[in-house]
Image (cartoon, rainbow, N blue to C red):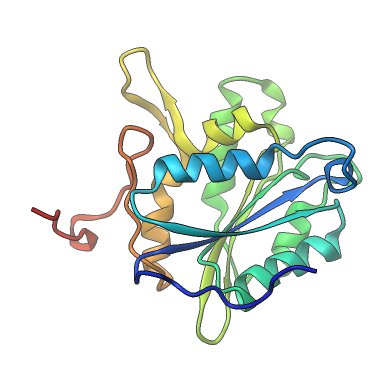
Length: 210
């Protein structure tokens, strides 16, 4: 049984995060899931403030995936849900369909940018079908992003690409996440700029603490 109780923020700007790893074999215990540990480790390094996590390791089943997203947003109150796996063209890859089923708004720029990043490495990036959406309830909204299944690809799509001098060459999708969460009424998130610099217009930035 999963915990479906609403998470309670310890601080007004604490981020509540749902992490879903989607894999038939890992959910059956045939191998150790790497997706959730990679996501949690990356977020712990990247977020300046604190975060609470609620996780799910589930099979490639459209109803199960949709139910997990709804639980994490509507019942647990997550501000951000990241999924990993199930975004390819194979018959069992249904993560985008499940995500779109529970969406109230589509955010196509996230998927477009993730494919642009991956295309720097492999031509088969065009086979990836990741989507991002907003799910809204009467009193809450969350951003849901489908990520690739491989840990290396997860990091690349979140962080973006840097040149040999360390300058950002292709922006990662997480740079847009904090401002998106601002706009849907979530907490104010700051990031470790050495990993990924969150972008906000000047009017939306809080003064730096002295």
